[in-house]
Length: 230
Image 1 (cartoon, rainbow, N blue to C red):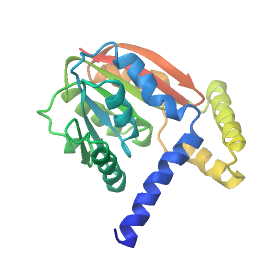
Image 2: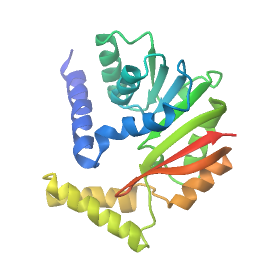
Image 3: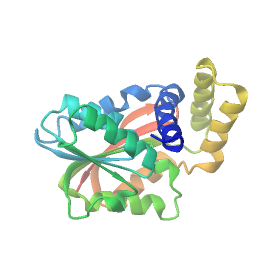
């Protein structure tokens, strides 16, 4: 492994550890998703993980749902390379496929029983970017298929969201992040990323054809929603 590739792999590994420190409950997010999809999907379900990162969530799903086959996609090639290495090491390459790229890298003809979208939606602008991603997920779900969406959300003009932001900042401080790092995260959430209120997330899910939409998770700025393709 040359030095450049090695550095990319190190960054991917550090990303996992950093996310675990950054978001309260991060390590349990795959279990939250499974707690809603696990009793709604068939034992032999085909499941799509959009924004699969280094494959940690895929490994969790595979170990707890041995009958599932899984497909993951992520635009960060270094993370996908690490995911592939993890899958090969555990002998899971036959059950789990991963693609480097956007959701367009997943063939539209490949239909899934369920999908997970974790910490992705809030990164896309609400100028058609969020809508298009959800449309492409719906295209790849079987009728009646289920989606769990988890990500940052909120309206920073409200006291509720400001309180959630303050709680997150305090959590980051308790985790040992210095002031400049906490300010970086604050700026990302309030300026650089594209957080929208829960009502807007519901509207987007409804617009692309999801029904039976319900909130399933809320902690600080992270929210979760369940929806079924109509």
